[in-house]
Structures are given as structure tokens and as C-alpha cells.
Length: 311
Ligand code: GYE
Image 1 (cartoon, rainbow, N blue to C red):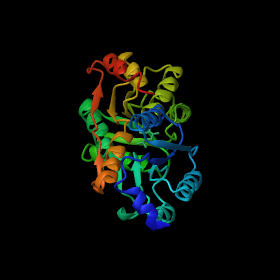
Image 2: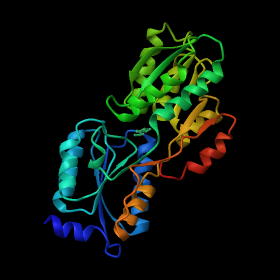
Image 3: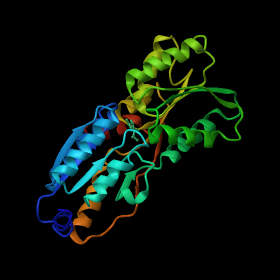
Image 4: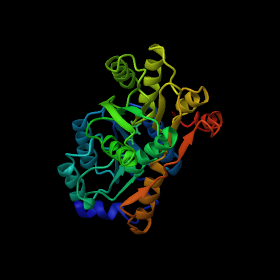
């Protein structure tokens, strides 16, 4: 019953807790690292993690959450593939008194339907990327192409908004093409190929903004294959700070990235442990940092620091 479930949830830190994790999939290096770190964090803390891979489908995530609720897990971690459509299933979890913590992406549901959200300020990330480009091009005319993340996902929406915020008042910089590459390397390559073709070979493209590093890495291949020089002919700024983008920066193929930590589970489990210990409720948003890295930040050292983190 609900009553026994509540009694078993708070104030029982000694017993082994079971946490269900509904993960989106493995579209990017960043997400693979988030999965690895979540497993590691659970292991270190003696938490029994039930992992479910939704293969990019919201209906799979909804089914996973329903099965976690039916099992009576002690908490649920949810990385929501898109922002809308979560109300009913979150209400079911709330009804069962199972705390839900959002990881890295946001939902548009009411705040009382989840315990907290761990993640970055996704609009700010786009602003950091846009500010970098504004500083880099100065008064030059600059035609920008944009590779967007998964349509309807909060990072795709917010990173587009933030970037445009930064470009406001800089009419010399214009976003000429914008299309989703679904946060994947292959998507980034394919869409960049079509951008280059549509732009008559790409000589007049001054910069690429990619909503994640993986799409930028795919685009770098496409740019090379088109006979242009990524990082010089076309400036490249993206988000995540995965090891491979630092390698590309060291090679001169990429210019800047905004870091997003893949360790979302650490703060999430900290919040759950405090809640289980004495009922402490976390803040509604646990914000991670958004640090900019460029070619002058010793990219090989940053590569080395990250290469064993599960990417
Ligand atoms: O930047 C991207 C991933 O949800 C914020 O999802 C996250 C994004 C991340 O696949 O690489």
C-alpha cells in the first residue's frame, strides 16, 4: 500500500535502496558517460540500480516508469527524451509516493510532479556558445549553420534560444540554416553534408554551431570530405566537452566547447540519501556548471583528464 511505501522510503538509509533509471539511449558520447557514471555512483553507494534503455522512445520511458512504480522502487531517475507528455506517468509515480529526479533534460510538467532536476542551465549554455562566436568574428559578416538536437527535447529548444540571445544586436552574424541531427555523429555528418551542398560547397559558411559535440564531430568529417578546413574555414562551437572534441581542438579542427558534466547521478543520489536519512527535500533545481573551453586551454590535457570517464 501507499502507506507502507512511504514508511519504507524515508528514514531507512541503512536498508538497500532500489532506484530505477529510465535512460534515453546512447545517442552520444556524453550520454554513454552519464550511464557509466550512474552505474558507478550506484555501486559505490550500495544502491541497487535498475537500468532501462528507452532507445530514444518516450513510450518506452513511460513503460519503464510504470514498471518501476509497479515494482515499488524507492526512487526513479528520469532523463526525459522530450519535454512534453509526462504529466500522467509522473502523477502515477507521485501517487505511489515515489520520488522522481530529472537528469540533464527538463519537462514542462508542474514542479510538484518531481522532486528535483539535476542539470545545467541549457539556455545559458547556448549563450556561452553564442558569446564565444560573437567575440571571435567581431564585425565580420558571418553566415552560421546550426545542427540542432533531438526535436522537442529541452536542450534542443533551450540551446537554440540561448544562442539567439547572444546574437541579438549583432546583425553581422546570421543563422542561415538550422536542422536537427538528433544529437548523433551520423546525423551531424549527414545534415552537414546537405548544408554544404545547399550552400554551394560551403565556402560562404563562416561557422557551425552544434547542440552537441558528437554532431560537431560528424560535421567535421563532412567538412573535410568537402575539401574545406574545419576550425579555420568554418569555425566550430558545440556543447558537452567529450574527450573526442578536445582531440579535434588539439588538431585544430574544432574551436570551442561548453562543458556539461556527465556526473548527474552524483548530485541526484546525494539528494536521495539526504531525503532517506531525515526527509530533507532538495531544491527544485540542482545546477551544474557551463565552462567554456577553447584551443588555448590545453585541449590534450583536457582530453587526458576525461578519456577514462566512460565516454
Ligand atoms: O548534451 C547530448 C545528449 O540531454 C543535455 O543529450 C543532454 C544532451 C547532451 O545526447 O550530447
